[in-house]
Length: 240
Ligand SMILES: NC(=O)C1=CN([C@@H]2O[C@H](COP(=O)(O)OP(=O)(O)OC[C@H]3O[C@@H](n4cnc5c(N)ncnc54)[C@H](O)[C@@H]3O)[C@@H](O)[C@H]2O)C=CC1
Ligand SMILES: O=C(O)C1=N[C@H](C(=O)O)C[C@H](O)C1
View 1 (cartoon, protein in one colour):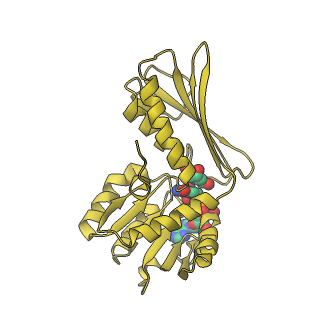
View 2 (view 1 turned 30 degrees about the horizontal axis):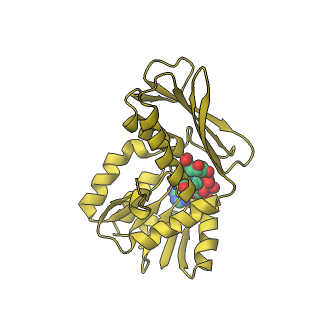
């Protein structure tokens, strides 16, 4: 594939390395100092976008306007998801978003959803989510933690909303706690706690390779799809 990398930071640079090793061609590397997205990105098959929450949707609009398939991992913008989904429908584009592109988190998410269903009828267990990331991370809680939380709410009638400022947890609220330390790539933990015992599901990224390889796999998948919005559930179908 001929790839445009939008956002040449930690993820963009690793994606360049791994995509090149897989035989793909990096045609553009666009960062904050040269955001020439208005310039025509000619002769590329896909754009892979990892930037910052405040700029992501603007980037999608510019790319969709050029009918360029978009793979994006930027988090912290999904309050505008409906607007982006309509943009993709209106422009007939292809869009792949994942808050976390690692296969391990995809498996952990499916496990978490099943565990939520199992514990739904055992109110003695209360659940919380904790996430740890590097100090350079701009958004909190992480997009992955929010994804875990939304999925638990979808699978457990005892939870109705996420609390991201968890000082006084009300009934039906699912608290998420965010910690920023050193250069932690991304750790997420879902804990079901009772007076008697605890059930803990934990995913620890040891490096950023899983995120980058997953994004490249998503790009290889997306370029062969019809117009639409795609997720990890389309890329990796699990027998559940
Ligand atoms: N979905 C996933 O699997 C993963 C998602 N992420 C998310 O990806 C995003 C980026 O993460 P990192 O690469 O670690 O951050 P980073 O800060 O290292 O890189 C972001 C880059 O985007 C650039 N940028 C800012 N505004 C821009 C613009 N208008 N046009 C082009 N480039 C622009 C910045 O200069 C920076 O180089 C974050 O939102 C993070 O949460 C990070 C890792 C995995
Ligand atoms: O900023 C990061 O580094 C990461 N962000 C994503 C998120 O917000 O969930 C994915 C991963 O945890 C790394």
